[in-house]
Amino acid sequence: MADPHIVRKIIAGEEDNIWPCIGATYCLDRIYQGGEALCMHNAASGRELTMPHDIPPAKVKKKVVIIGAGPAGLEAA
Ligand code: SF4
Image 1 (cartoon, rainbow, N blue to C red):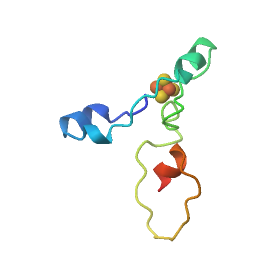
Image 2: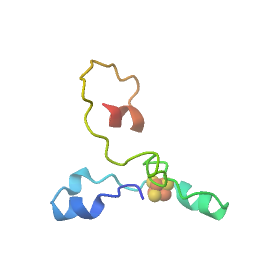
Image 3: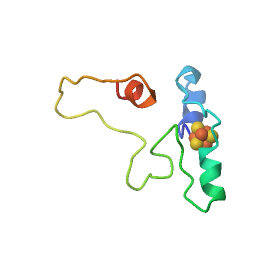
Image 4: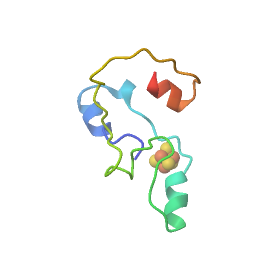
């Protein structure tokens, strides 16, 4: 769930780019409570109908400032 592209990345020899499961079991906790299987490491997992896994580059480039170096900030950067 954390990286839906894991097989493609392994075949392509891109193991260093695999987004690993961090084992926090948020997904399992949600399932056991009757909720959707969501992933705390990949917001798109379980939300594919509204949130694509692949985000195309913006058509118009802008300069932005990324504040924060947590998972979201690092991914955005
Ligand atoms: S929610 Fe946590 S344990 Fe479940 S797949 Fe995502 S990273 Fe792994």
